[in-house]
Length: 205
Image (cartoon, rainbow, N blue to C red; front, side, top):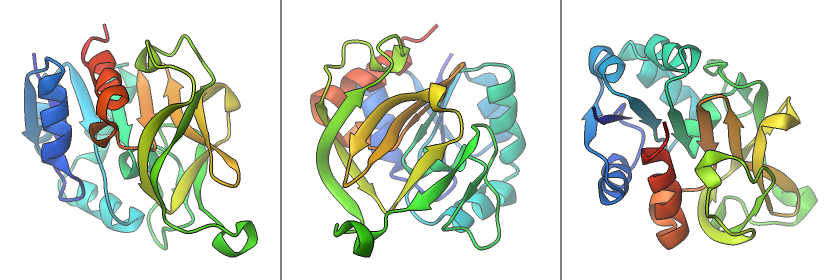
């Protein structure tokens, strides 16, 4: 069975699909709920604005199937904005709530107060908090991964924070709850470490 990469017009879909294929997966890029249901694992990429992304998912009738995947514990990976959509709400959103799969919200980096450049763009260290997280198997502490984002997740339950990164503050860069995984960075752009993370997802039971 294939891994579904959800195509809703808001992500670098082909880079994600290629990284999964290099990691040994058969990939189905799709925007059809029936095809997503038929796949053994699901990836939700994302680049852009929170409201726009939720609107595109709703327009394609995909919010329900994503929630269903989480409920039945089908392995589910959100990347960058895709991870943020798993949470209940975002400061960026003017209208739309998130999917509510993970408890918590998404907030913006305070560039003025923290004296940092926003967006947070480029390489930064991933500090492993939960060594038993299957997504991070074989990943060294402080491995460098690639980020491009202005908002970051604030999980309400700190027990789901599997990895963190420092950017004037420590934020959750990997989330893990049951079979739901989120990466705030782009594993498909993170060279060796990113491909290992993708391979870990491909090999999940």
